[in-house]
Length: 219
Ligand code: ATP
Image (tube, rainbow, N blue to C red):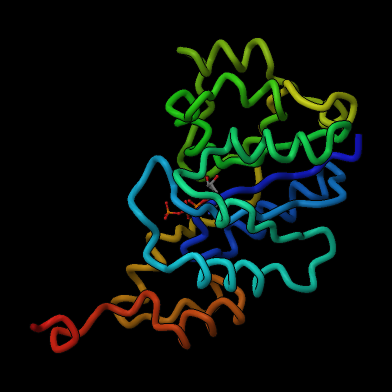
């Protein structure tokens, strides 16, 4: 079934927490590829700080040279909120016979019932949940039920069917967040060693997370 890892995010900015997660899952699940999809307009949160082109440039820099890492900018060309289900419908039409594995962190998985048409997600793809520091798998409510029904401990299931299973996997815990990085940079800190140097260069050159000086905002 030649599974495709589908890793969507705001990537505002992309960091080693994202990259290490994608790499470990690529290896663990023997995925021929992981696609990074920067989202255009995130449906469940405020607008990103860096613009779409800056976030795309950062994702390109971060993934360059890693076999199996692919950048897919389709969500940036779509008007309106970037719903994951629309992306999966698109990918399913393009790759009718391949397994799709939607990669999410545990925090994102816990919000799944709030996603647009969330029950359709498992009709279109598997869900691979990467554990993040401080989050626990739910055992109650709609997600608890879903895990009882669709959870699997066998990575092979993701190769044998195109969609429908949930696989939870612990990845090396790197407590890095984009929010923390934006704050660090706005306060004049250096994100070195938390993200690839190429990403840091894009941030430095564009000044996208620099806090505006009072003189810049004065009327
Ligand atoms: P923010 O702090 O702005 O909310 P973020 O760091 O969580 O951003 P996103 O682009 O929103 O980054 O995340 C994309 C995906 O990556 C989500 O599924 C999220 O759970 C996962 N993710 C983010 N940070 C990490 C991390 N440190 N380790 C593993 N997964 C992560």
